[in-house]
Length: 117
Image 1 (cartoon, helix red, strand yellow):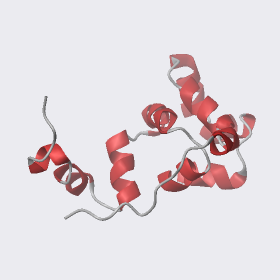
Image 2 (cartoon, one colour; image 1 turned 60 degrees about the vertical axis):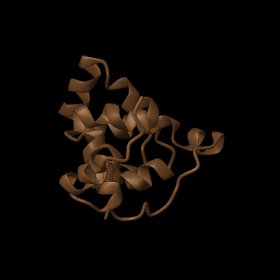
Image 3 (cartoon, one colour; image 1 turned 120 degrees about the vertical axis):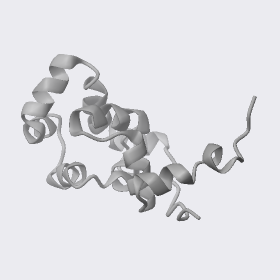
């Protein structure tokens, strides 16, 4: 059985505003030129976007729960994955403290309990 979700994050307007600078940078990584510039100097890109030292450390250490708590939109985090070398599946597994294999095995579709149309 998979681990329980450690906490739920309520994404309010205040939370969104607090993390807007991070969400804006990560969402910009859909552009190939922006993505290459970020990959060439991730720390410099984050500093230019207004990230604090602690926020840069959260990205470097792939502390996804804490990034979401600080207001990064999950969809923007997915965009960042392409430049940072992770997928949303990788992030989901890490957020639950599981391997990717255990995370995927716990998905309702894999357990035969997913709703089907």
